[in-house]
Image (cartoon, rainbow, N blue to C red; front, side):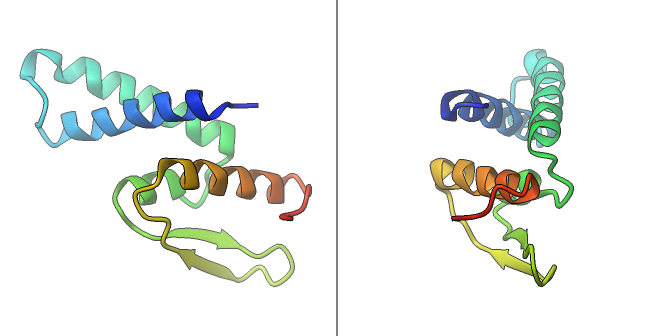
Amino acid sequence: MMTSREFRRLVVAVSSGYAAADKRVDAGNREEFLRHGKWALGVLKRYFHDTDRNIERWLQGEKCVFIGAVTKAPTEIQIGNDLDAFFYFMQLLQNAERGQGTG
């Protein structure tokens, strides 16, 4: 199980990779930030099976998507700039996918 601390570290790495892609990072370090950010995004996507791009959506300030277990209808949710709330949202999605219920 991924801890909140591990999640935070990986999200910061991805965010730094985005900053490097936008050229907001020193040119000498840009490639390293891009490489590490891409790696961290891959780790998060694989761990949470993020087929709906919620990690990328959240980092870009977009609404995240929750697919109802019964209705299969997508619901967009604005989480805001709260990393802990996003962590628990991703855990909720993971538990729902595993059939462990949502509460």
